[in-house]
Length: 286
Length: 286
Image (cartoon, one colour):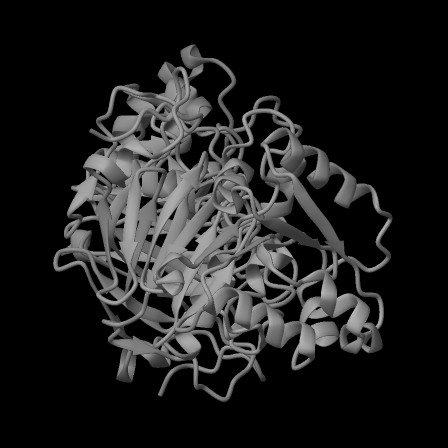
């Protein structure tokens, strides 16, 4: 039963932490009276300040049990003291920073196994920015902002935490001009759906097979299933990518996406009622 | 017969003017021994320097007859002296600047009628940046960089020169993060194909019905023919756009696009032979 409830909340960065807090509010709602662990593992030299911001935000949203998971060396990810922070956690929230720091510090450690267990048993795993990218099997790491994909281009990929498969997540998407790099990632293997998430925007993945959109920006889904031609395997690394017949869906709050059938649809009825209500903006689609 | 040869060379901005000059070289090739007029109408206060740069570049490419068309007030666009600059022109090249300056100064004037005549009778009309946007019936003017389209968003459209119909051109495309605004433009009326051109990249439109790609970046074609849903007509102007099932083609040098059937294809045989050859980069697709 519990596993039916598990969810991923994948945030494109710069989510509001002081005003409406629509996205963090959804995390808080799912934590309920449970325990929330905020991981700052993605940060190079954790100054503490970021955790304090999140703690304040989540407290104001009614979360009572908030703990910090800070890991500066891979050794720590194997210590019992750190592992115990995750005991009975209902949710884990990954802050921004460097996604490679998350995977290199906790990949294949007891901490990571506990994280998987929390999710499997019905928990919530949330992450923003670097914490969003890290969710998929393969993650985009650096490079490729504001440029079209060149076959031997600057965008790099690395293995992520793999909490969701069959997708590649990108964040700060339109703000940092990342369509080119995500198209390049999809071209490399169209089995992966590209999901580009704007700032102050999130997808909430339920039952591993569908998500809905929350927040003020857009979510772009890049589907290479019907691609008829691409030059991605060409030897000339300086050649700019060509790829024909890519399907793209632009989604905003009120939209759902079926990851199995790769099809968007509008939220209606009871599901739509659950979306946050604001005074003027973001009226839900009827 | 002459009309078969007419062509538009539409450049995404920042084309090389001092080194390989691949794109300006194509303009020069089509000018041949004819007369080339460089229009600086798009510039607010023409400092002369930009014309000098183009004159130098085109001279080095073998163009012998180069004239400057500068118009600072709409009155001048009605003067015979200015009109005579276009006499017997084989090609007109529009520099960058402000696209609205071009349309507001020469729209519906004798200069514009002469421009149409030059094109109709087999001439070449080229333009870069603002000079590219201005080619279509409807042009994107300002706003919408690096953001997702919001229904009442900041991107603005205005009537262009209309030398090519059924398309909306955007330039500096991936460099300025303009996918959002072009998706928004296509959503407003999918009869228009969105064409986003990167810097140092051009499309060469032949016989009004197809184009090929030249230069080092990419050209994106956004086709809304199969769109199944969009919220663009919603009353809530702050709502972020949703649009499902958009088709996108990413093209690079060596690709052709059929504007009638909205279909890309690779250039082969004699056509591909005509592409510029470079030592290592940009080897043509065999």
